[in-house]
Length: 152
Ligand SMILES: [Zn+2]
Image (cartoon, rainbow, N blue to C red; front, side, top):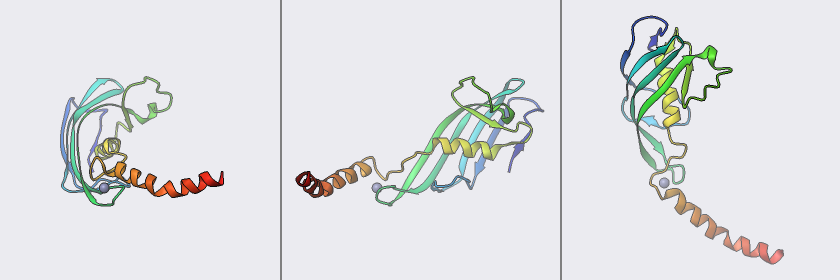
């Protein structure tokens, strides 16, 4: 666990970190260490910014056919960081803000939150997999539809 005190020290802080387990429920397993590289800079007294990159390879399951599916995440990170005491009543409307205790800033918690945001909601083994199943379902339901039509 890596804790930073963002209220002290000099900025920017350069971070290069590998994570071997991710505490996010319902996502795939890491195939190899997740790589996180970033720079945290101080914008003003209570506003910080994290610019960087996260890269991870997961093994998950296709939600449709349950095949093991490789999932690769590679994304830039551009997030504002504020103290969690500002969470309530913050209506600055910034794209993305991460709230945490700035004095005990838990980097892993930050990374996990970013990965949770980046991780796809629907995991598919291939682009077509879910669509194929939907078509089949429709065809399967046809006889019932006919019967329903007769009853009506
Ligand atoms: Zn599939």
